[in-house]
Image (cartoon, rainbow, N blue to C red; front, side, top):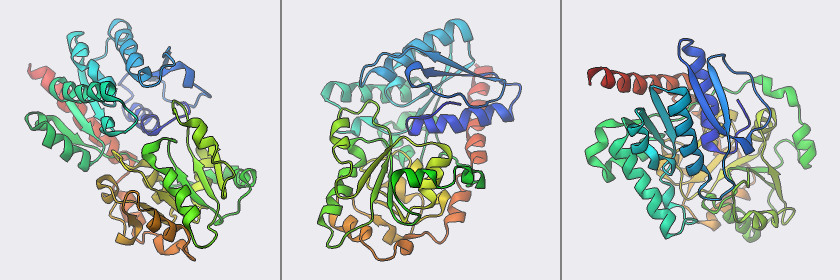
Length: 365
């Protein structure tokens, strides 16, 4: 596949090649946004990657790209099932049904809860959720917490909701191929930095980490922020943090570089105020490093020890955690057991069940 720019793209990069590999008789087409396409990766022959134009319009890019991809799919690909990701693009669900396609929608998060959206965009996103629940053949939720919230809001459609968490492959020593070059590049040593990973937007609340460093009564380790600023209106604000109080903006990192940053961190911390799942937390668990995260329903599903959680916006608690003499107390002792619940195999099997359920419903009708 191609380099990912966010959690949804990372999820798709794991999902579709694995499904294509398990089902050589399936034909899978993935539509990508052309301006984010970078270096190609090997993928099965029955997986086709098609790059389509997407307007450079913050807030509407995914929406318009999905509409274009849907028409191309209906005219040229003629799929049995169309898989739409995210609540915004889900607004096209009824149109896809009119074009003769069965539709599965994956709800990664209730995006209208993000404060960056104005009243119009908020209503549009809520409408997208309603249309997905009303007209999709199946709705996949990436966590039990999301499924519960969605069922409470749309009880009449709850019979077609499925909870399928993300999956991840166990940490491979192949990631050692890159050595410690990325650490040398950023000027840090193994075990000598705190790591935060995620798109640099306000709902991740990385600003709380900066304030925590300022309030700390003692010098804390350097803080490395890894994540894309693509589409972020506050990009310049985030860039202004660089080299202030030991903050390092590392940009987007992939593959062995990202694995090394996880593996050698003294602490991984995630102060987000909303998550549909928590993929970066799963990646940190996979690396076996100490973890501290905000007390969200999606984060609670990992069943970390209570002291690994802090309340959203509790800067004093974050400061105490970051300034701790030994971060190893935040290492989940049952990390391997937790990871066993989030394998790629289980994720694929969950999607296979949903696909077969939708296919059977078509046959019955």
